[in-house]
Length: 211
Image (cartoon, rainbow, N blue to C red):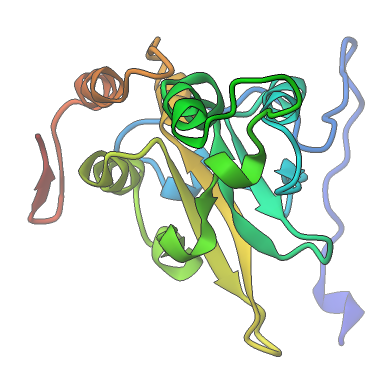
């Protein structure tokens, strides 16, 4: 390496009132439909994943979501391998009420577990990080809308051993927040409608994303 080929960078003073950015901190930046998809992805290489064990109770899952400020938890085993996901809709919607009746868990000491409510790994569908890097916010929104889900996981692969790892998470509510749209957390249809109205109608080459 020829050091003389590199010029030193310009340095300047620190302004009064300057703070610092904690890991995963900062206000998510405002986006548009044609902004890079990565701008609305929770990047697990930058933010610690919110996880829970399958034998945890529904109440513990709900409290973990509240504490972490998220609506989705990765369900992991003792070795850290992903067994599924559980969302706020699983713990606070109609699902636990119906499931409690079906399983006959109405008495004390019979609380529903994460394993009762989670979506198992075998039923999950994910996005590939290589595709995400070439996509826009509108593509992510269209994907969530068409599958009727509020979240999507993003997978990457270790370049050395090929091991798959969950790299990121997309959330409809996060997209809405970064678009500046107020939404109702559990009203999926309304959420998508409001996001679509906020994004408007735009074109990616020959592709028009519209309802």
